[in-house]
Image (cartoon, rainbow, N blue to C red; front, side, top):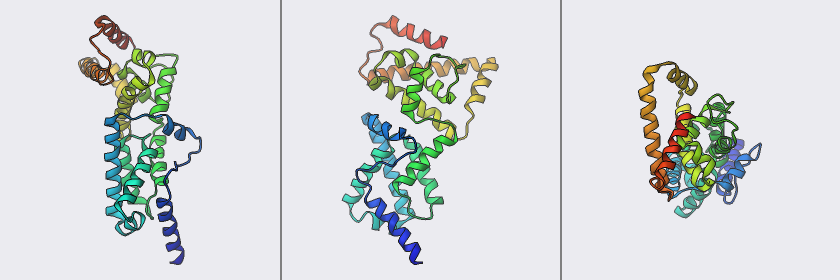
Length: 252
């Protein structure tokens, strides 16, 4: 019993002394991503909502330990900022799903390091890269086709939806948020159990899917125009350039 209380105390102390720290990783890649990633106001809001949900789940599951860890509203707010900074490399939906998993499986109060490891493990299990790593792979790929040896087909699909001219021609601060949103949508489908390889193969083999593919492409074009406007790019300026962009996307 004494040993158990000691372990719980260590967990709580870890939570209370997380400020200014980022969970370490085996390859150091995630730490670099934390420093490089810039969030849009909408992404910050979605991340904040996800961390709020995470803290609410922890409070409901471990009420006593939660109160000991965060004794005041100020403590909680300060901790949430630290957790947001460390978890911003992951989609908000994944953070919430991992939080639900953690409260079911964790014997002790899950700390930031455990939530971070669970998020990374969810990606790793499916062979997925974190968004910024996937973006770099898409930008540096020697081929812009499905036949290229992608680390995961989600990298290609997100690049296709974003548009190769955008990835190759726009600065990272403009192109990455567009790519990231598309990539997270595909990653969420993978995490929900969908086989993207089978989906793409079925679409290529079945001519009935042509209309659906066109509909998806039109939707992707509309999203691209909206995102271009949000990023301060006028999609109507140089209409022919935009049409050429669409043609290139169709050929890829």
